[in-house]
Image 1 (cartoon, rainbow, N blue to C red):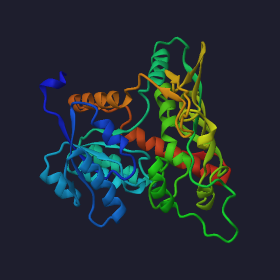
Image 2: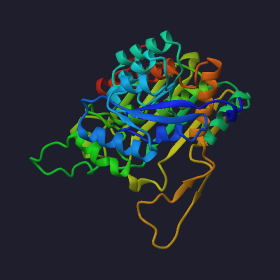
Image 3: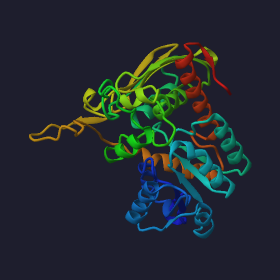
Image 4: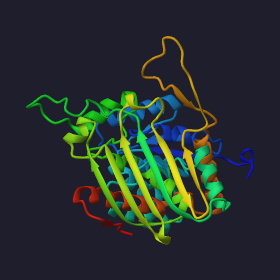
Length: 370
């Protein structure tokens, strides 16, 4: 469809306290127009402040009532990027209002909330897209190679997803007798440098925060469902994780249907560990061959005198995944078809993460609750 011949979808940004790159990404596509920011009135000041700042930047209103905003601003799409524990509630309310939904990860901190959202999305016949990285050039190229049959049928997949950001003071730095680091207070503080991936009252380890990405890769490249998982996890690097009993590093083995085996390494390993976002690499073994994929490619390295130590040396180029995600989402709305990562697929990933977290605590093989 020629985007110049149709009216853009008007979008309501339902909270923007977690990741504003999602509404910004939506806005890169001409078929989507940010029209209003909305949230519930009983939120604390820091939530309203972030929402107002984003609304002011885009010169759109901020309404402190979600239902009023949806009713009064003629919107067709909701963009949800609240604290993780509020994701499903806001998305359900959007679905009940007949809106299509783009949502931040994770789907929820509770599997029962995922079930509630799946039911609402399907009953109201709206499209749902979980934000993901599956259309990065290297990942999309790998998918095309596998689909062509060049390496045969996928038999095994391994994903390294090491995220090179800090999470506050290093483990072991808290003085004897000092109180544990408060999770939400640390996330609010971390907003300034973008390391606040687990915003919310409920502490989240890296499986919950970032696990969707490698699991979505595995799903996209193998088209297989995870049935059982075995995980090992702990807080190795960051005091806030240790204080709140959530992992910053995990290894996971996946038993998938069709006899496929998967493995993941997921962790937040600190800004000093890598010149880019982190070591993110995929290995796929097929019946006739294999491939290795560096998620960051294509990239260039930049070095110059006086360079800020916090600046990434390696920079990705040719990346327009946000635009491509929204192109796919617009097509799904037009045709009434599922998106590449719809509500049921997102729920399956959330169930796999839940089983992995459970396995990391029990030390046992755990079944994914489908």
